[in-house]
Image (cartoon, rainbow over all chains, first blue to last red; front, side):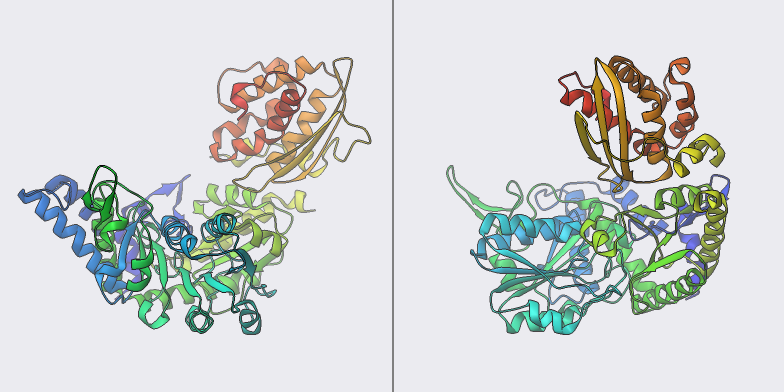
Length: 408
Length: 148
């Protein structure tokens, strides 16, 4: 497939911003959506909008079929053994909270350990802090190397006999580090712990096989992989899901309700209380079809090539500090322009039509480790090109010039 | 979008040569404030004598807009009655909202009016002023409702 034509599928990308062609380099925050996804969501609302699982009328049947076939599609996307392993969530954050509260909190005892890394997004950090507070378990961190990677010896050291949970991001949203989650899962299991993976930055960008990774839970978001906001997936092994309690109670998730008690449906329905995210799931299914047509391996290669190119070009610019390992890495570059605050960099870039992220990227502990108050991040997806990186570099030159008197 | 509307000369001057930066030996109140969405931090210290802002210092780290706004604020309120400082704060917020503001009262602070056209940066410009409002609240005064 000719990837240079991909951008045409994304209506939003054809606009100008501040008089310049929009160069969208913030896909790690949220991706843009192709026509196929927008059309699928629109078609649902225009043609067969109905609540799922309970109506006997024709539209309800169509909506239910679409919703449940999205589950099958999501299972296939990450090579889950069955659609019963797929819980639809609002996104990665909700999935990780479900695991921390519905699963881990019931199992953790005082003195048990939860092993984390300092590169976790707040969404894979704060639920564990809360779980530890509630149970008397303690948090333990695998130290971070200067280049933003983990040493295997440190991982082995951190995961011990008291470890009950290892929670780790597959790909860091700041450093781009790709963590060896398969190997860590194996070690976690040897030591009697469950492996929870934050896949928010991985699932959109590379082939993911949860059966091969052998993790117990894997959470990701639809909106970072071309689907609408408000839909995500929590994968869980069957045994793990059977041990997880629902955290949302209400309609849809019940079996029998008495005045003083109730029983739950089977997994995964018991985790989806209330009217589910029907349009979101249908949009996710369309996004998966779109991604599968391109091929996840082709998407990974494209992201890696663009990131290499960006690292090379930015690496040659005087006054640029790059963060994270050189390779392998996720499709993003995090940097600072010496003497210029990332917010100011982002404002100048925006005037050039270039959208990047500036701030702490929901990873305050990591920022402290990097010794940076905040950083700028350019992130790529399959609709970006080398030309976009060239525009970024040009805009950074403009920013340097604009602030030259401030830089001194 | 005109970058020069945002980054006026006087703003860049305050950013590169901040006034009243540092710490007071004696202060009535010290307020630490963070902007949780971006990580900018400011510490504002105020010494009040006879109802006047006798001395004021700030230190922190942040973007050009937040640091310049802090520097310009300290210049504007130093030596003024506390009530006058709070009046400035109100007018400054009006200016940030793009509402009518008393530019005679604001003086040099008018240079920050361009920030109103950059909605993402308004919180940068108001960080120091939020600290000032907190000072007043901690002194037992009423907080301006728009300060949050």
